[in-house]
Length: 283
Image 1 (cartoon, one colour):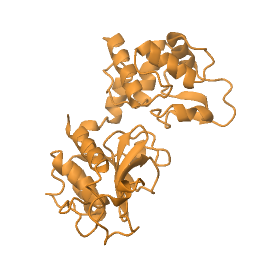
Image 2 (cartoon, rainbow, N blue to C red; image 1 turned 90 degrees about the vertical axis):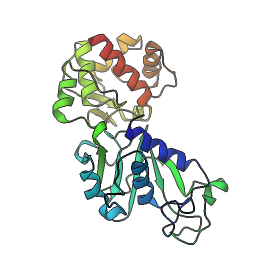
Image 3 (tube, one colour; image 1 turned 135 degrees about the vertical axis):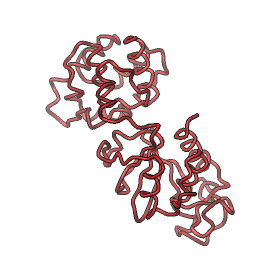
């Protein structure tokens, strides 16, 4: 596993282990507990990115240290309201109050609060999780805290020039995000207009398209009758009804075509298989 995956795996493991809870006094694992910033910092330190050694200690100094150690501020490429454009391992940071990690598929991992609803004075371990509640350290659906920025580690970065190249013949990065590069490659493969956008999609279908980058997928409450030329191309390829709207039935056909799990939800794993297929067809 690379460093990003090791960091994300650490966050997941700690969140799922009730021996680890929340505490701001014993926050570096002395009794098994962490707070929001020490957990994220420790996840990267243990993955081999020495942010703690370089002075990262709380939300207020994380930004400067993380940039120094190979992270880039990719906020402009992400939709903070929806999580669109985010990748597994991205660090979500509010400079004053909170930090978390994006795990992919619309999920984040975070250290929240102890069993008393306070930051100190609780028992070691995740008492909330033991009581069958949402844990002191937990994995939950994406939300905007609000975040001030999104930080991405260098091995997970795709710059604008590289992304544009990926849409014009270079190998796609297998990142599980149906973003501009994957849209352009899809359009190129299907011989449709290559504008990097999937237009005129019903808002009600958004819940099935978890890996769709909302920066290039257009969802509408109404006025979507025309559908998308690229979607019709995909539907024809996958054997789905060619109405131009990519919903659950189209996704099931896509998953059947690709030979992956058919659950009717386009998450990052489905997109990764599609990206590999496009790279194979280009080779």
